Image (cartoon, rainbow, N blue to C red):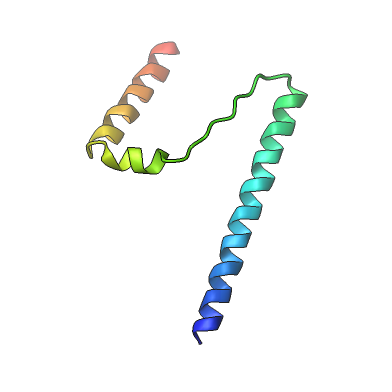
Length: 73
């Protein structure tokens, strides 16, 4: 029983990894086709850094983004 659960988890993980790779490849190909500049980032430790931020940081950044987009129009 535990083996089945592990195999399902491994299969789901492989599906997500495959989707992420295909999506990133599509983004790169689209950027090349449209002659956009691209930058690669190392996101190691990014989630841990976000967890250390105060809980209301999401609200503040979201409202700023909406205000900025509204102001540009």
